[in-house]
Each structure stands twice: as structure tokens, then as C-alpha cells.
Length: 175
Ligand code: SF4
Ligand code: SF4
Image (cartoon, rainbow, N blue to C red; front, side, top):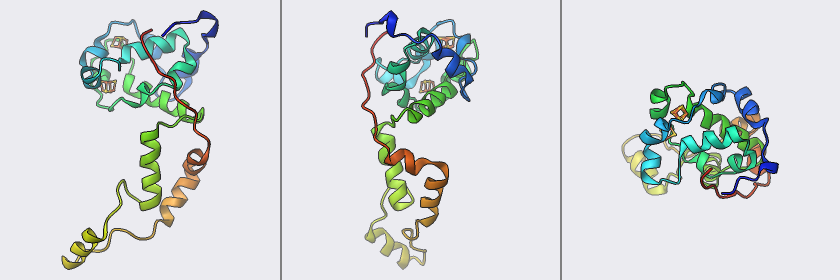
């Protein structure tokens, strides 16, 4: 990805540093230890936590917040433990995801998961076969009233976020 200097936002790193979880982002000295131990990077080298931190520091605000990559972090905390600068990347990724959602971008996979929870109260629909088996075993039915889930979605603002128009992501490459 080309870095267009006039498109950079020098305030972005300060904005991230003010976000819960992003406080240590400016400590990064780009050693690459995070990427070398990242299991997602090992599967797909396009995902690179060092690069994402670099993009934040450069001020590539739109590219970072609309990147699919911030959603790929598996929250394994390997980088968190190994980073010599205590950047706390796992928390930085969470901060970036929170900022992205406020900008109207929820990754389609996470949107689908939230919608499933909203519809069924869980991440998968319990089919009738499973319910009958449970009944035979004297267990309660799993599917039922999801009013509480709807209330949680409403109170937390998730219902509004899900109903808002989602922005299209942009692709992310090296920076
Ligand atoms: S391990 Fe820490 S200091 Fe090194 S590149 Fe990653 S975030 Fe930066
Ligand atoms: S927490 Fe995320 S970025 Fe860090 S090593 Fe695990 S998958 Fe990679």
C-alpha cells in the first residue's frame, strides 16, 4: 500500500493512546518480536501486528480502522507477554476494533456472530433434534425467550450499531 503523506493523520497515535487498551502504543520501537511469535502471522504473513502498530504511528487512520487485519487477532496474548516495550498489542487491537466499530465498520464475521446471538441467544441455532434428545434425557430446552438478550443489545448500544449501515473495508498491505 502506498503511503500518501498528505493523507496521514499525525494525531491518530495520540487518539489511539487515549483509547482504553491503546495507552502504550507509542512505546513500540518496531523490533518485530510480536510478529515473530504471532500464530496468525504464521498462517498468513499478510497479518502482521508490528506493521499495524507502524501504520498507527504513521497516521494511516482510515487504512487501519477499515482494515480486515485488526479483526484477525486471536487474542492469544503471546505478543503481549513477549513485547520488550510493554506495548500490550492484544489490548491495542481491542482498542482499534472499538474505534473501528464507532466509525461504522464491524467485520462481517463478527456482525454475523452478533446477529446469531441476537436471534438465538447463542452462537448457533439449537435444532429440534437436539432439543428432543435433551428432553429424553430430562434436560431443559435450550431455545426460548431471548428478550433478555434483546435488552442487553439495546442497553449496550449493540442493536443500534448492528442496524447502522456498515462501511466497506479497504485492503491493507505493507507499510
Ligand atoms: S514486540 Fe513490541 S516493540 Fe517490538 S514491534 Fe512488536 S509492539 Fe513494537
Ligand atoms: S494476541 Fe493477536 S497479534 Fe498478538 S500474537 Fe496473538 S494473534 Fe498475534
